[in-house]
Image (tube, rainbow, N blue to C red; front, side, top):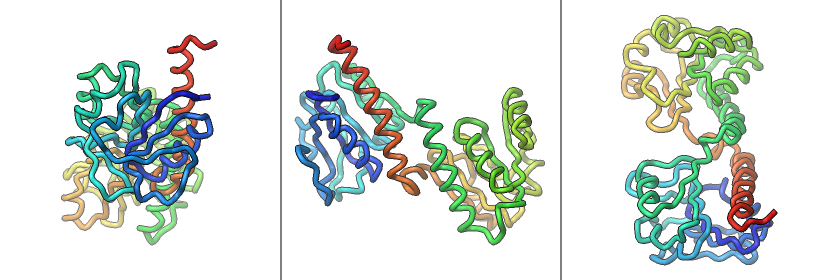
Amino acid sequence: MLTGIEVAFIGGDARQLEVIQKLSELDATITLIGFDNLQQDYNGITKVEMKEDVLAGKDIVILPAVGTDDQGKVESIFSKNEMILQELHIAQLPAHAKVYTGMAKPYLTNLCNQYGIEVIELFERDDVSIYNSIPTAEGAIMMAIQNTDFTIHGSQSMVLGFGRTGITMARTLQGLGAHVLVGVRRPEHYARASEMGFMPFYIKDLYERVANIDLLFNTIPTMIVTAQVITNIPHRVVIIDLASRPGGTDFRFAEKRGIKAILAPGLPGIVAPKSAGRIIANTLSQLIEEDFIKRDGVE
């Protein structure tokens, strides 16, 4: 139980509703900031505006998947009011407070570091990322179907990266009957991809290997699908870039060549916000309870 724990939610999307519900059931004291247009009512939960002292005395601050932008702006689909997380807000937090978010940009990290406030990035955890890879893969498949005139079954589908999202993406495509090529950098990933029945290749050979593909799914968050690579990609190909912004594709050059390239970060919150919210809620509640036990010496 989280009785006595003060939790502030700042902004977010539909995923946050599952987290709010979960922490409310655990008896946390909850304040919502940037939820003024939320139609759903919760008993015992307070809605407030982004005032200077709004975080005073809070034990936990929960931010959206991308905590803030580079200027401190926090996005919320539940409010039209602009919210900027500033030094004057973080300064109000007690020393033991923690800030939870999906991923933190330097602005947020630096701001919290000034006051010794720990920032926990949930998407850096293996468990959260692996669970999140499921709605990510399903959403990517949905986008592929919507933007092609051929079946995934029998297609030459390429996945770049063999991490937590790449593995799930490759397995999902394989389950639909695609011939799956997997681009890797490390020999152990090459071996594992081969063992799983994929067709692995090294990223250094990407230019040659894209010549006969139908679909390309990128999970690598650095520029990998360059202009040079795109010159060898057939015009029928749809590129779906699942990496965090700005992605790993030269979108300008793809458009110039008439190749459809789609940047699609944050798919879990778009295609399956309820499931994605439950993933975050379960992990968050566990982390907060563990921290509460350690801090108060509860056995």
